[in-house]
Structures are given as C-alpha cells and as structure tokens.
Length: 189
Length: 198
Image (cartoon, rainbow over all chains, first blue to last red):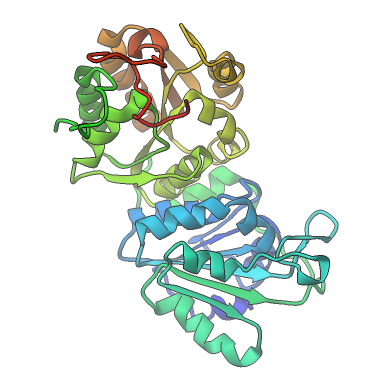
C-alpha cells in the first residue's frame, strides 16, 4: 500500500512517516531525501505535516502513519480541521495493532472491542475528504485523493497485520532533517 | 498591531511587552505562531493573529506546537510556540523531536503555580517548569520584570534562529500578575474569562 502511495513520486512530494511500520514500508518503497521518517515523537506525524504544509504551500505534503500513532494525536485532527491546509493528506495504514510493541490491539480494532472510526473523526473535524478503504477496488481512488485532491484529505486503509520484512531508514534525526531541508533549498544557519 | 480584547474580557496583560515580543518575532521572520491560550498570553496572541505575515495556529494540546514547529523547520519556516507552564508537561516526549533532529524552536511560556498562585493544582507543574525544559534540552530564560521581557525574547530568538539552539522564554507570574479569582472592576490581573486553566 505504501509503495502504491509513493509510486512515481516527483521531487515536489514531501513525505512524513510515523514511527513503526509506515517508516519501514516507505523505506522499502525507496528512501528519499524528501521523506522524513519518524523514529519517535509518537502522535506528532500529522502535525509535523501541518507545519510543513503551511511552510511549503505549493508542494504536496503526504503523511503516512499507523492507527496507533494517529490515535495518540487524535486532537491534531481537530487542529488540522481548523487550519484547512489544501496541500496536506494523511493516510493511516490501519492494521488494528501496535505493531512495534507486540501486536497489542488498538482502539480501531473491532475484533477486540475497539469502536473508533478514524475517518469519521476526521470528517467530524471538518476535513474536506475523509474516506475508509476496505477493498482493493477502492485503492486507486484513495491514492489519487492522497496525492492530488484538494485537502485536507484523510484516508484510512484497512490492512492485514501480517508481518513484512523490515527495511529501516537512517535513524540520525539531524541527518534526516538536514537532507530534507537541503532538498528544499533551505539555507543552513 | 494592538490586541483588542472582547468587551467581556478584562485586560489580561501589559500590551507594551506583548507588542514588543510580537515585534521581536516579526523581526526574526517568525511565520508560524501556535498556541494553547493562557490569560497572560492574550495580548501577544492577539498581536500575532493580527499580523498578516504570521499564520496563527490554535492547538488542541501543547505538544502539537512542538511537532508543528518541527514541520515548519523542515519546510524552512520559523515558528514560535506559546503556552502556559502547565502545558510544558504535555510536551516532554515530543521535545525529543527537537533534540534528536536539531530543530531550532522557540517556546514562550507564561507561568502559573509560581508567585502568588491561589490554585494549588497549578503548583506541581509550575514548580518544575524551567527544570523540565532544561532536562528536555532547551536553553531557558526566566524573566520576572515586564520591562525586560522584550530584550529576553530578543536574546532567545537570536540564539534560536541564528544559533540553532532551542530556547524557552519563561515569563514569571511576578511580571504578568497572579490570577485574581474574584476580579474587581479595573483589575489588571489575569481574568477568569480570558482563557487558560482556572
């Protein structure tokens, strides 16, 4: 799924990925100077995307994160709904589990009694687009929404919790930030 | 560039330092100002919101401001985060982002639970705020004299935006006034209707 979201990316696509599987999946799809993979700061991915989207209004900002990470920053969906950044999309890869810590269920996990519908939360916070993808046939439209439609766009994609091989990005935050800023032509201090 | 409080709100802070700190932020090219409101920050929030060169971002919780500033940093914009001392506790883990990635971020914190506080629930966080920020890797500037807030903000902004050092300006209750729980007409202290925690 993450590889499809990032297919044919151009240099103007700016990507933030949440701690865990989405960072590994984005790296598996091809590490890139304009990808900022989080190794921590859980709950912050969407708001980092907001700050980036406000700073770079002419570029698309795509946040790809997990359900656990999104749940920790639920309030940020409200803040983003307030700010209405047209160039921001958040895609949640929802496997219903905390994958990095032993596969404990999250609040999106219906089988475990979870009741949270993340797309419904985003819609209630005023996001322009808020959709849930549960079937392969919906994927093409979802990718198009995340990459191109006016935002804020929220897409949550139900995926299986089957483990995939880990492909790790660099973990030096100074390096990741510096390469990202260099990619955008931001002058060093 | 004056903050206009709504009629049912008391004047919440000295407009002089609020306008001066806004001028400091403007001079340093701060483009994103995020906040969770505090009575002591009311006028500064108003000044920043009235400035077309600044995008004002109201937050649902303070750590969002830390994350927002990191995103702004990645995108080449300068950012300041305004919050009450109690909100500093909400930021602790998110500040690892600034430290791990070298984010040049600026916090402006107004104190509660510090000097003449009548709400005991404000004390646990208020008493440890500067130390927590230092433990999180920020350089802290505590200022208790309203006349020195602007120069302190200037020093901090220089260290942040020229020196790349994350800093916090901590404005004491002695400068902004302890909250009056039964405000009388003409009270210049933090008012009950002006936001922030009770």
